[in-house]
Image (tube, rainbow, N blue to C red; front, side, top):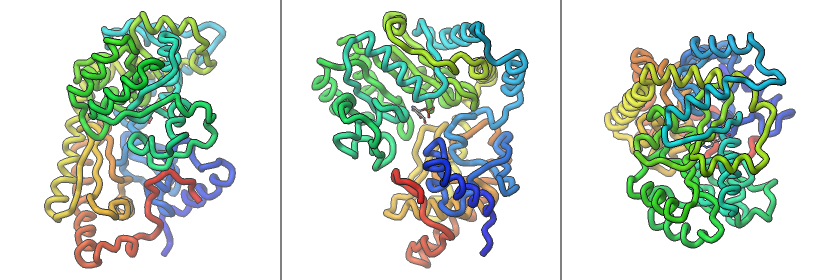
Length: 442
Ligand SMILES: Cc1ncc(COP(=O)(O)O)c(C=O)c1O
């Protein structure tokens, strides 16, 4: 049978030969969606429509470029600010005054903070926050919870025990290339587990430089948990860093911590902050942030203007239009679709995620096979879809209705295979099952 996405698949095969791993972001590997069948490349994207390399238009109901564009792809008003900035010259020997304007906007949105530094990516922003915290405390060890990027400090957690990142990133993440001497530098603590946090905090306190927390993702953060962390960090003067790189702006304007009503000492943002243009942000209290002046933190492209222009336009748009509320409401509608058909077709479905970042899976040993089948069949219905859907404002009610109709059809087929084919989804897949673990694509 001729595949629809041959051009995209062939390009991916050629790319693998000259770009190791094939992609720049693990979360965009075709193998984590639909090996051998995924469209893989796009020509243009607007709103939530994506024109594939094979010239087939699809609606994107996945995590939508890992949550980078809550205002929709190629948002005209953000584009206009960026294009104006490019016309005026994106860089020069002199600094951009937009750095000041952008910093002021962050401080106004977060009155607990006094100072700001910028980077280009999220992982860089966390690493900068950590360097500042270490410079402040003159200590080394890091306690963390959540995903925080590709840098040595984070991946080193897996050096001595390759399972340590399983709950925070992907099972089986390789620590190849990380210096062995970093083996004692970082330690994860369990999300929403007060006891685990207390034990580790006390154990490592003597050399503890900071505590990093991604405050929510699949589950809401328990008040008791976050307040304990806040109290311990305050009592022992250890900087608390909230990583809002995926969360920030999706759930609450300015970040999820505003909902928690618990302030960190430093917070980091990226992704949604600019609706798809490169910028990482570190904000924090003066007594800690001013330690940045004592260390070397410097990079050429952190001075370019696009990120600042995009952030100012995006944040102002979000403020004016209460985007976080819209995203939560769209996420609820999407969760309702999965719950409704899960119930109707008696599927062992589990719907998780805070409302603005919904996910679903099947409580069966072959959940990955079923989700792969879901992706395959939704593609035939004209949707990019998998077990996550991070809403954008361009997911209109009428598009959610179309998605609902497609889900209804596909969930019905899933129920049929479970009942009549003894759950043998592999038989119905035209390619391999999606990769759920870290492994190199072949
Ligand atoms: C919570 C969190 N921290 C850090 C990062 C790393 O950001 P980047 O991929 O821009 O380096 C991510 C990216 O997904 C993230 O979700």
